[in-house]
Image 1 (cartoon, rainbow, N blue to C red):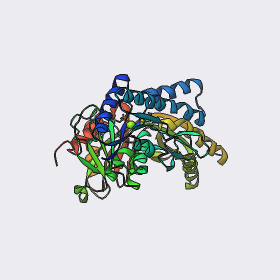
Image 2 (cartoon, rainbow, N blue to C red; image 1 turned 180 degrees about the vertical axis):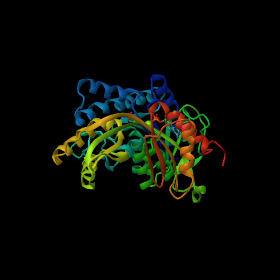
Image 3 (spheres, protein in one colour; image 1 turned 120 degrees about the vertical axis):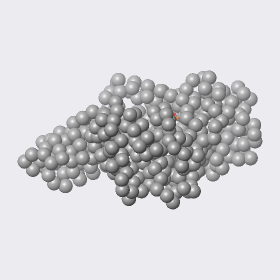
Image 4 (tube, rainbow, N blue to C red; image 1 turned 30 degrees about the vertical axis):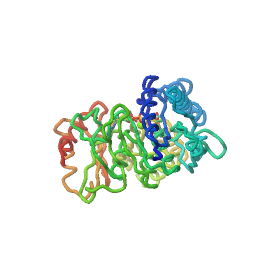
Length: 407
Ligand code: ADP
Ligand code: ASP
Ligand code: MG
């Protein structure tokens, strides 16, 4: 007998038929004599729909009220799945994030986990019940509802697997593993049998939404191995763990596309590092993550600065930067310069391998894809392109680095 945590994402619980399908799969694991905790997302589209509804009322809805609203999505699914299990004769009970002891700080909509107890889950498991937990949500020490950022049910599953010392953590989704690129975009993408936390983190933090980056970070920190697999078939998935055999070599893990970034441009800033430092400090204090940055020399000792942030944060980033500029007495204003897609080649040892950048740029230039911003780091080489060219760019890079080939 093992204690197994299974997480089912939005598409896997997308409608009543799919919830029943999940219930049947959970029953199989339960009938085989295992203790099962199931973490679920909201039905696909529900979280987006709730966000859109809030935004139709207010362009900047209050974050506490957003969390109150967004928790609804997962709460619907836990109740329906518990009912579906019961209808199959499996004793089951649902738990909210708060009931499962998911404690967080107070940063609404992006809350960070401060502790996870598991609540009464061990007692319910001991009674022979399957426990169905709402992903994505937590609670502050004051009893306020919080959410863990988009894709946060992955994090809930990993944290609960850790808290309960589960033997296995399975992330069930709508693809049968982690590929060298999004298999829906790059048809020649290859499924990886196993990968290290580092590799998964590189892909996830570059925009491959198959796993939330924060969930991978948590798994790495507390060493929680997990498997990504399909909720629609029984194909073996991808195991993500500490070390894999090929890690000694230079490894390109894959190509990631982040379709959810926007550019902010500031013209005519004073040419000193203090101003730029203050702007990025203000953004950091607001927990806004900046991805790519470029600074051009302008006229008369003034400079232009462009940087990219997640599109969900763009309105807030504009506001934060403009407040900072007015406090500094600088005339320039931050302007939303539209959406971009960031296409990245990710792997270990990017910088130390010569020739990588040349091959990357050649692949894009051969397809006439213009790069708007470029950045390199030890783990990735990324370029901002027009969103309409993102898929073509990913395919070109995937092909140039022969990622579809067997090693
Ligand atoms: P869930 O709702 O189960 O959490 P997501 O939609 O968040 O699922 O993540 C699964 C999706 O991630 C897939 O449908 C696929 O299009 C996308 N994806 C992006 N990059 C990759 C990759 N490298 N490997 C597999 N899937 C990827
Ligand atoms: N429902 C949340 C979202 O759409 C959390 C998740 O699906 O993981 O972001
Ligand atoms: Mg997801």
